Length: 307
Image (cartoon, rainbow, N blue to C red; front, side):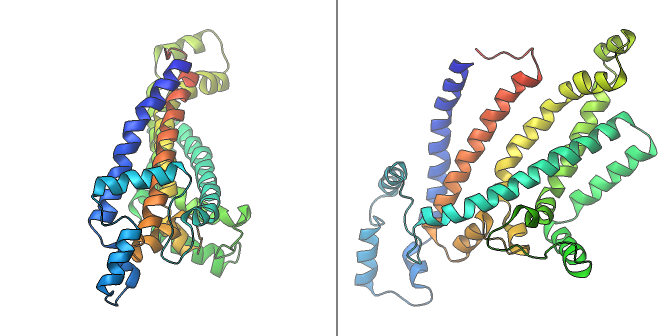
């Protein structure tokens, strides 16, 4: 297992370099950070040249990238156009989005797998059909529609929760936005769980366990569910990074100043250091989440061994 982890970490290095270089190229080569810094005003040529020299933008792109990566390994992600360090923006944004993501993943796991198990065990019955229709509706409705609808119903009309999230982003305030963020993923988890459960419940080892007299709940939890979770874990592992990076709409709806909000502001203002810095961290989150998923395979399926 140790050698496998080391090998996977080494494999992450070229993936990380390639991903960050593409991000850096798209942001810096396809845009003009100096022009964005001045907005609608045309910068003085001498001033623009001095800023480009100070930011190393007058060098070839590969040299700019090497300089940027050298800064990252020193803990310096650059300075945003408002003069604030990108690391300071990260320190305030990532904890909020991480809490929001954890709430969304918890809802996704508990509700999605529960509905999937129920639907898989009741395959072909009205309850199964109803859950499939419900998940199809959830997948079809855009997040901004479901978000504003739930915000209006639960936050404005009925007053059960706060319609917006405070600066502190307390856990109880994140339940509704976490639900909105998790809705589409929850529907996919339900469908994946349902398909795996329906397939495994008819397998030979299940019939053997039932013939031996094992209780039904033990057969489902210890055998059927455990063998059915591998595709679900794969999806959830990849979804963690997607939820953190894709929370732009949800954070805008509930006024959450997290990663999505900072990325939106960075893209809107062409704030290159902010966009590249935040996306670089999200790349690391994706890579670590995929490694964790691979390690969980061995826990769920004893037949999987890593050398």
